[in-house]
Length: 238
Image (tube, rainbow, N blue to C red):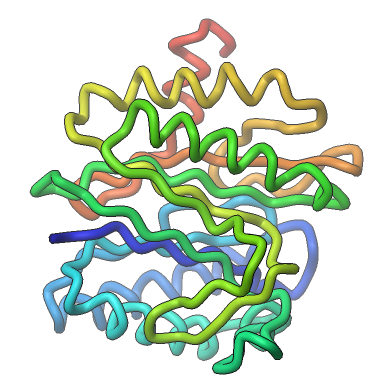
């Protein structure tokens, strides 16, 4: 069985946006390290000050891949709050990295990755993420989110505490043709959430707090496709 493993983290020096230079260095080294073990992995989402690294991985390599990703994040980080929130003991785990893992039936790992970032929107961001996860469970092949009311065990890394925010959702697809339907439902459904905004990959958190921004990415055969322009065009909103 193969999986899509996604790690969302804030390694930025500020609370608004990421560093393009850091992201480029991280992506280059990520490709180098993952090519050595035959795994397809990339930065799929850049949302406010958070990035998501997603990997198409076999079950026996999940721990190894996550450990490589975590070490690379530490190497290139400008901010360490999320990374330092991870602990080997669930009792001492704090606000750490967000993690989601979903089974994939596709030989290409066809999936949708939804990354959230919040500015003073911690009280409602999890509700939005769980809403998206439920759409994935009903219409996708498998769906998971990082939202949990207990410390989350991340294979190869440790535990993240319940205070972890900025969730990530992974929805895998049995058929890539389902992508349009599922992303349309996510976009339309989240319009009903107050102060939740769909943004283009790389957008800073330029909103009136409290608020939440999110990005949607198609992760297909190791390639990341930002879905903002496609969804906006489909809905005649450009």
